Image 1 (cartoon, rainbow, N blue to C red):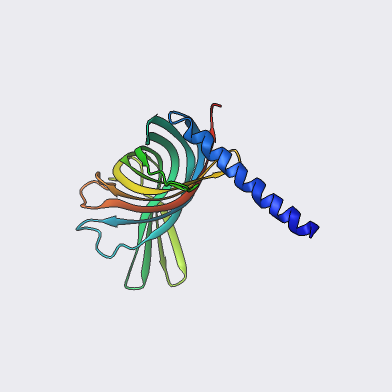
Image 2 (tube, rainbow, N blue to C red):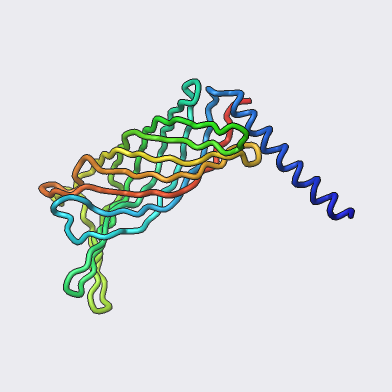
Length: 215
C-alpha cells in the first residue's frame, strides 16, 4: 500500500509540474525562449540534372530562439550546422556529394492550442539562408574509396544557398521548459552548382528543448 501511495504521489506531482510549466508559457504570449535543437537530415538533389540522385542521411544541430509576436504567432530564427547533398550509383560506382552548411532559418510560426491538453501543435514557414562550410565528393568502386574537395575558386560550387521551408510539430512542457518535436521540408531556390539545374531538397526530423529567458 505504501509503495502504491508513493507511486500515485509521484504521478500527481509530475502532472502538476507539467500544468504549471504550461500555464507559465500560456501566461506570457510574448515570452522569449532560448533552445538547443538537433536531428536528422534526409537530403537529395532535385531538378532535370539530378536524375539518379538518392538520399544522403546526415544531421543538423544548433541554437534556436522563439520570440512571441502576440496571440499564437511567434518568430523563430535559428543558427544551425546542416548536412545536405545526395548520393548516386552508376555502373558499380557509388558517389556521394557532401555539402555542409552554416544555416540560418527565419521562420514565422503559429501555435494551435488544444483545449484541455498539455500538447500544443504548431506550424512554421519561412526562408532559410545558408553559407557553404564544406563540400566534398566521395566515390567508391570495388572496395576502393577516394574523396576530394569540391569548393573553392573555379570549382563551380556556390558558397551561398537559399531555400523555402515549411513544417510543424508539437510542444509539451518538460521540467522548467518546453520539449519541441519537429518535422520540416526545405526546397532550394538557388543552385548549389553553377551551370546545372539542381537544387537542394531536405526533409528534417528532430527535437529541441527551450528555456524561458524571463520569468
